[in-house]
Image 1 (tube, rainbow over the protein chains, first blue to last red):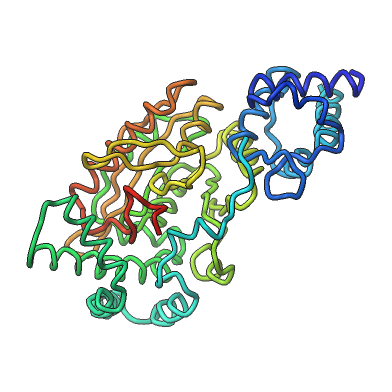
Image 2: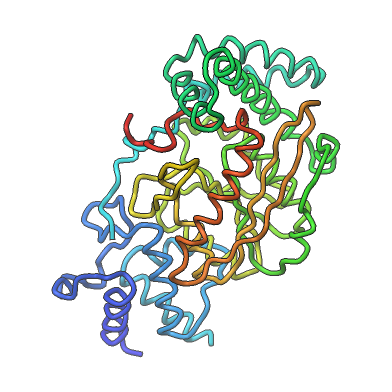
Length: 91
Length: 297
């Protein structure tokens, strides 16, 4: 799947699962930082990450069950897309 | 989505015991025979109310609501909270650190442990700051034969880790300092592992829910129930309390189910189980603040 299309799909997940305001979608890019506590981030908290991961599993059809290194994958929308692509290749 | 939270403002759960000096002192006495060590802990505990007036006031208020006691009875209950805490604290840094094979020798009664055997796959073990909660987690980890991840609050002093948080023997401590910790927990549950978490201290975020506790609404964390519903795993309330002979009583309550959209109902079931335990052991409730209004500090 192309990166632009995956970014669009992720934006859909954020609107549907995280109640992200649709009018703010143009602000999102591959460099958008996700976790709270980082300057300029979207401020996602632990509950948001639960919703986001469930949404990704449903949308992209794989189960997130790794033992480690998940933090790095969920840092930005760009790293998240790379992770989803790597999992899609695995399947 | 929430904005960043000022963690400094969330330190309401801290108390004067939570300092490395106290842990060092208590651990330094671990060579004493347990009976003598607990007697010393009780003596120190009896002095504590006069040294910690804010905590004493909070405990009196809590005991009043839990028991309806007044006057000298209330005074006695208040002191017992501190002496019980001192004994459990002493065990926390000594008895709890013994090899897993020796821990059952400190347990007198076990109720409901068969419920654990009926549950396969991922599981959330839910406990509270009641009795020796950390020992409950270690004992259950030994019984479940599955890796157990214990979720802990970010400590004010990292140094405290060395006294109480000993990874190994199937137990791993996970700090909730990072918001992405929930991803690790989800993945662990999917692998059929166990998450141990305390469900009595609200976080002061949108992830709290008000539930009646001893007749008055109090905030409790909803996170464990959202996690359970996301993965479809049960929650198992478990407690470890000190009996009159200073042995531990392990109580495992009925498992709870949190279905999607029904997480608050599951939280009410948890608080009911917690209230039943606290009604039975009011002086082993170790939250030294106003549980009904925790952020007014």
